[in-house]
Image (tube, rainbow, N blue to C red; front, side, top):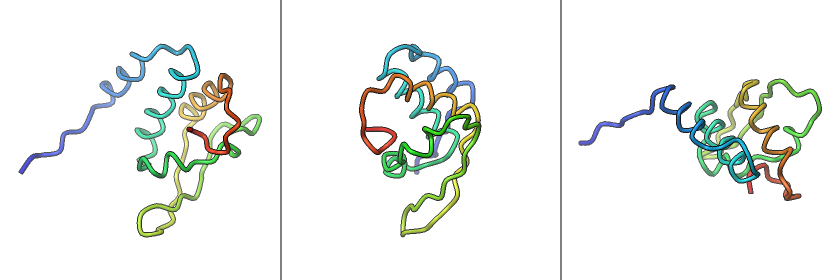
Length: 102
């Protein structure tokens, strides 16, 4: 049986840093990797995140209730660093979708 291999913090940071912090798509990709890494969200949960809670002025951190597998509800914490990356993406975003990542 294959053993799972996890990325180290340095590897994830290197991955994020390898994406230029310029342009809507790059900022989106950086934010997605940061969110997945820091929250443990599943892909379907990530794609269903609403934009509204992240659009508030002065937001430093955030806890959201997420409905995941088997309709289980759990709280997810978004750190200041994660919020900062999401805000950078939203500042460049041209879509008016209700989902955060479309």
